[in-house]
Image (tube, rainbow, N blue to C red; front, side, top):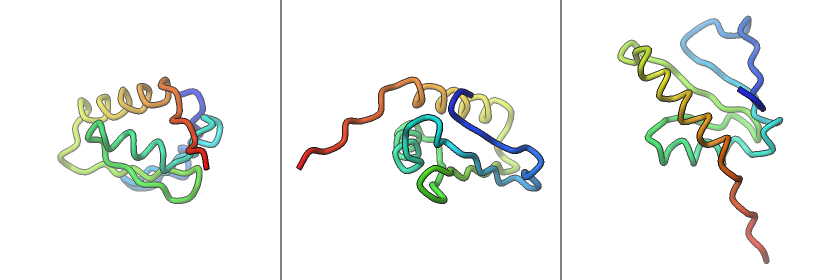
Length: 83
């Protein structure tokens, strides 16, 4: 997906951590938006997101998560709060 980088050689388990720096959005913002779509994820730093699969997550669940990520990334980032 555009804006996301992932080194598949570093994925050794069911834990996937990927960089979202090139999206121009913070990991916390993206994770918050994914949560609104019932997709669990967590920021590991400002631009990294951690997602985990489980034995009850099937191909359809993965496709649903990918679609939600694409939807979130295609939406405009929320405007920054003004002081």
